[in-house]
Image (cartoon, rainbow, N blue to C red):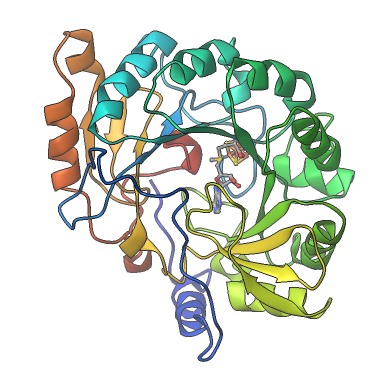
Length: 367
Ligand code: SAM
Ligand code: SF4
């Protein structure tokens, strides 16, 4: 697979410019705030560096109805055979075994999780695990208007919606699919169903959608939504994108600050993860930046990932994985595998060393 490229597309130069452009001295970026109040009586899972691991991102499929130009080649990828994909019962069994050890929060992702049939059935199985406090969903939103109610009824708490443009022609150009999709309507449907706080994730790409940063930020003046701008990550084939398309978060924040006074903020009450949040003066919503390329949050990492075929991945951009599907299907206890995986969780991701650990796309690991 292709890692981040150097040479012809200016990778090295753009990367140095990017890393040099880290948070400016004096700029107060708040630390990620842990959600909820820690309960001293609960078991805590720790990795080899003492970080408490309480959050599992579960990919339910590697397939997708979009082909976002930063994520998947237009021809798709080599999909996992069905027999290798964990059933909903198998996923629930893994969560049932992890939860008493310290797992508290889940995110269902993919690929596009809403294209897997009967997702509400999985949500209901996970909701029934007593230790699980929060279940969120990452989606491109195409099916959200139709599914928000049933998913909420099954026990889903909230959604993150990916939306890279507010313009229909551009949405189709970035997704490389002409599916009916209005991100505002999708967010409203989720909000009506009570899947709050609503978070919109925007991958910012220079020359492609960076002229919409202010438009997205203005949404927070009208809605209690949390619009998070993600630095483009150099993952996979990236045939149509180069490092020149990366827009550092400082630049994103400067564009937002041009709208009006911008102050650091604690962000949404639940699940504010690695984003640093700000609020435009008087806004009911917040803006956030997620800065994988300026590398500010590995020290507070609290998560591991489960791929659709049952591999536990301890770092989004690391090489390390532990296969759980076969031990699970043999009826073995999973705790020793989990503990072994956490004992090898890396201290920080390898992206800045120009390695992406065998990834061709974030859709393969539940980005
Ligand atoms: N299909 C769902 C979606 O798009 O929200 C969930 C899976 S998607 C892989 C999860 C997140 O990864 C999305 O917010 C997407 O924008 C982000 N993502 C994928 N590839 C990325 C890249 N190269 N750089 C930055 N973010 C990326
Ligand atoms: Fe699909 Fe999400 Fe990847 Fe876009 S980012 S191609 S919606 S998995």
